[in-house]
Image 1 (spheres, rainbow, N blue to C red):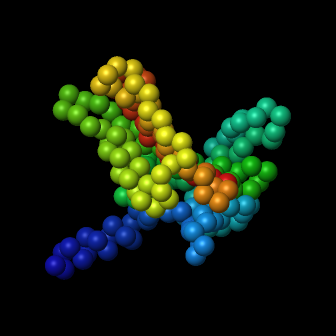
Image 2: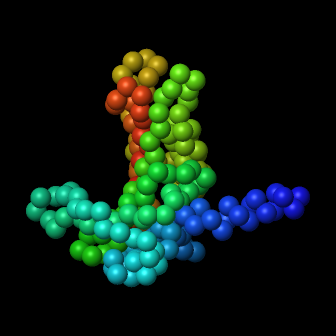
Length: 182
């Protein structure tokens, strides 16, 4: 029993092993993600996450200012028990407005279901339980048995949640992307 407690405590205290989660207020609206609330500046975000580093720009609309993308150097965080490879924090007009987490996994000789597929199922079930049926849901097949793209999208009080699974675009790799933003 003591060994179990120590193992649990060490996992909770390891840097980067903390759970990331949506910040939900009492009314059920989503106010942010992790330690960040929507609309805070990059400077304020850097105080909350001292390891937040600028990665580059992303252009969504050529007529608007590019989005500044930041990442964290620590070990990947977990969301709903899923250990993502990376979390990217998006700032539009120097205000936090979205987060994108991604996980890539490989098919192998002994792999029937990848980490990305398993994580898709876990996140999809969690999000449906938490927020109800998605506003949009699609699945595209290449063949009768191979799923290429699965996507779900929710809109909750002005906040979007998008869950996307992409089957192997290359011979042995698939990807899961989770996005949430205002």
